[in-house]
Length: 263
Image (cartoon, rainbow, N blue to C red):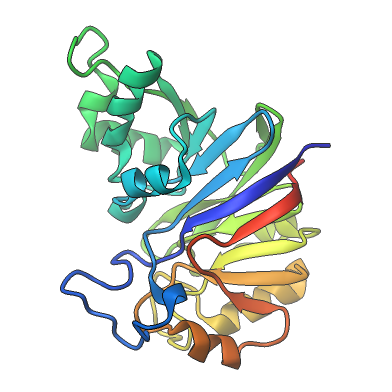
């Protein structure tokens, strides 16, 4: 049974914290845990390295964590804050002399091919040869990369569907407003849930979950520890942490879960 590390390379919302213009909103700039890159996760066992999403901070995150090779890159959905670092794979292609395997649902993969055709369609180019191999996944159909078992599940992201991922005892639900019963059932039995709560106290947010939704969902899921992520400038680390129920925590960039069961 492989044990691994699960590292939040970024836990911020679409604009990060601070936003461009050095805007901190409600976040205290003197609290290091308020400094947030766009959301991305690094998952590692002794033999396998996976990534979830390649946002605009992908290069910075890879350099900070000294990682440059992946057995698979999983995508939650097509939005820019989760995909616009994809062209960095062109550098990794030149470095490793091979294409990186990427995984997403049909809609996401189609969008990536449309947005970044030069990442996929230039196999004979000497300057920018094709850098990614596309793999279509389907919600609720488990698959394995290396020694890590992965179960994707569907999420309501308001204007579209997104994909969450379960890895053994831990699950990652970025960019979601709510979950259908089939997804809730998929998550039952996890010990740790990293989940979008970017709306926090705003019940009218159309695309992100508020904290009451997270509380209600976890009444069914039963995760022992819940970590809120996709955090905007409206959610100061210390302020929100003091308001949360026991077992619920604010995430921060660099938060790492070790010795995690990933099957």
